[in-house]
Length: 92
Image (cartoon, rainbow, N blue to C red; front, side, top):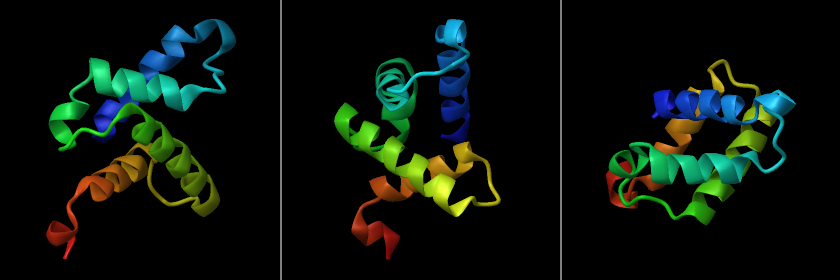
């Protein structure tokens, strides 16, 4: 999962190279790419809908920047996305 997020980041930077990766609507781009062009739907079951993934990415970005954890953003997001998708009975 973290590797997919890294790949999305690298691809996004290439696509938006003319503006050095700057994209105020980055979460929409990531969500679309992750759902349509990556293995994410096979990893997260059930696969999130695009709007839910956009919401989660924006939320995780805020949480990551506020908490400044000792892990990469990719690992932080991956862990949280996987936790979010687990059914309550599996978490217990």
